[in-house]
Length: 158
Image (tube, rainbow, N blue to C red; front, side):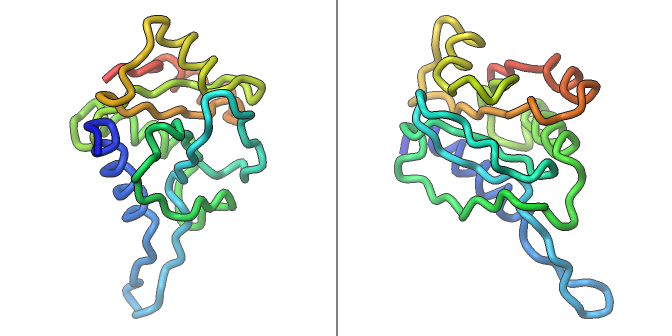
């Protein structure tokens, strides 16, 4: 695996662990939805838009997804999780803090773009995709105040 894939795999495993069901104090089970499903796409592939407004999908390039373990992408309503903007903000904060692996995080302001176009617009010189994990965050479905707050941090070039 490349350094980028090692970082992506660690990030995916953290998302998966954050999506695991938990025991309740009375011995029941708390259902937990997908924290942030990771979806690989080709650089020129149309972006999926068929996700629940409360989902927090993140996209990665297929070229970086090779040899990664990816759980099934659940794009439905994520039980027991905060709003998507709060989860995305938390991920960005943890990346900055060094408690999650570094990644280049690229904003997606429109569902009409592609990952390749968004990457070229955000990082004109390009990214070494063997060395740096690249994650794309759709923002078009967020309320403007949340979209603007997150967009001010992006692109995040770690």
